Image (cartoon, rainbow over all chains, first blue to last red):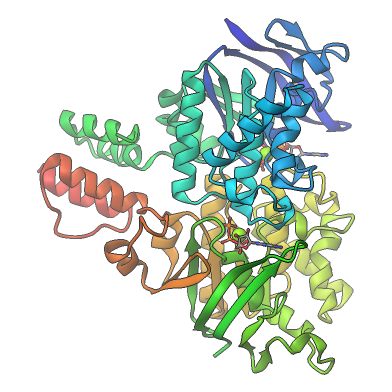
Length: 268
Length: 287
Ligand SMILES: Nc1ncnc2c1ncn2[C@@H]1O[C@H](COP(=O)(O)OP(=O)(O)OP(=O)(O)O)[C@@H](O)[C@H]1O
Ligand SMILES: Nc1ncnc2c1ncn2[C@@H]1O[C@H](COP(=O)(O)OP(=O)(O)OP(=O)(O)O)[C@@H](O)[C@H]1O
Ligand SMILES: [Mg+2]
Ligand SMILES: [Mg+2]
């Protein structure tokens, strides 16, 4: 079943400069989809359209069977959590605790449950010792962790991560990836915008944007092995696949090597 | 010596009176020429706090920093005779969040602000804006745009362009490649390296990307819980350092090489630094 359907979607911020052109995209329930593409290709804009934060010029967005309109805006939003590219855009509260609570308040989750989740998710992102701190006094990576905790705590069916781990240290990034995997196992639909090919490996499917259009979409590893598509949108091959392509170009065919490099590209 | 840290400590004071010690007894030097340093360390370890000391945006509470002969310590703020402005031109700092740096109504004005502030004429500043915008991979049409209506990566590029336009002696970049697409990341790192070679300046880059460290750095500093725990070569860090304790990991090329050797049950004679070198080794092993 498709949880998100996007039909003939077009959008522009300014007259005569379309930013998204005729986007058609279906996302299945429980799927993890990565959106990749060069800077300015329209990834964040697409995520804001899905949230109803921007209004499409043309086309239609259907979330969980509900067409997105002014009347259905709040209903649709209650199904989606989004971690913004800049965590500062997410902070409204005086303390970290307030900020984690904010999204839940909008969903009218009761007090006791809120307290439980603040504790749980602040620990999951290792920010439980910072609950009373003002969010603007955190380091860059700490801000990202708090922003992630706030959205995880909402426990929505769909979660959009817009470069949510771009400022995390390697271990912090691994731990967030692990949690996204858990969310997926619990049935959530994940939309992850990223420039990190190693993160994209974990997704089921990949959509590549280029200058506001879908350049390619499909099975994650098929796309990550497609040199032409990756090059065309400023992306890169994973290191093991780069090596594999080099061996292919030199006509060196070794089945064992091929298997090993594929496994390594899957982080195995 | 361009910048000398001597036993620098710094604590943030919260409104409730509590104190958080972000830098603890830090001593090291940066030369004015020939350095290409990466600064790494886990989230919250004090990297951004440290680099904001390098152009005296923050002043130490104990210890001192000497920047191009000017000594900065806890008395500096009250001392009206010390002019910090010239230091900001000599040591150009790109912030972790571009939003903290962008404020003018157009990208062009934003980029021109720094140079004009340091005495460059209007016409020359305009020329510089045209040059640097292309250096960061954006075309001239961006100059007329508002810096607020850009994508995340575009903002990042503009914030870098603004500091490049100041032509600082030391270029300090706080996570310049986070949010850039892979090609943009490679191009900008190459650009910093080119500038470094051409004008023989010093460069300091904060990053979480160990590939960047291994590929570009001559020297690595590691911060951990406010302390400087490592100052040395990338090779020694990755082959001998306590990466787990410092929340770091291996560059991909080392990790993949290790795993390949394990799976193929062989040992390469050399340690490859890039995929081309690894390819040659693998070719040899398959022969
Ligand atoms: N508020 C705005 N007003 C006008 N144009 C905008 C605005 N926000 C973004 N744009 C433009 O729309 C295009 C798409 O921007 P978007 O933020 O969606 O890109 P992105 O794919 O998320 O890029 P990045 O990887 O840099 O975050 C860019 O060319 C950008 O300059
Ligand atoms: N204005 C502030 N007030 C109080 N504490 C602060 C302030 N700014 C930073 N801190 C704290 O000081 C410590 C160091 O922060 P800093 O920003 O230097 O870390 P960082 O190494 O740059 O981290 P990151 O990789 O996440 O950007 C953090 O624990 C942070 O919470
Ligand atoms: Mg974006
Ligand atoms: Mg920082």
